[in-house]
Image (tube, rainbow, N blue to C red; front, side, top):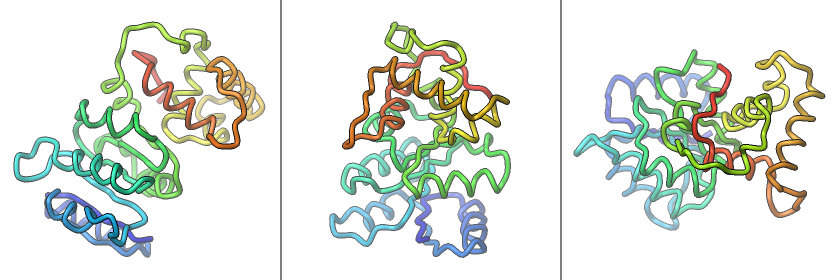
Length: 223
């Protein structure tokens, strides 16, 4: 897999490059968002299989990396992007996540439990999945207004919260210590309550997660 990394820390960039190269990936690194956009900002650019980017990069060390990701996702629809950062930058994170959550991840560095979790997140995002840290959901999409999500039971909120992390039904069953049929029943109920009928042109699971990300205020996700 071809992976582009945007990370201004020399040590972290080197560490990530070595880790991913050892896994058999072809890795290219850039230390500024401007360099990244210069390479991938052309509509005819040779795109990687995944872009891994930090949020705060030179020259101001505020939100350049995330703004570059928003720009490139808008230019190259479907470009898989995984944001790996110590920070949640609300304005651009909301824009990035609300547009289309497929092939997208936002994970906080200090909440990546181990290397296997990190590699799993990379693989899921590259394959078109969604991996969003629950803390990102809590900070970026905090709202107090009522919505159709109010119809969900506490257990259904647990399930859709884990769906927002990109978990499969089997992984949700394991996390919640319930049977797979029970998870499937909850997912069906969630899709029904959110008025998401079968549609060949849309992925209902992704639409449900988008609704959750847009509307969920303080719903906790099991950890």
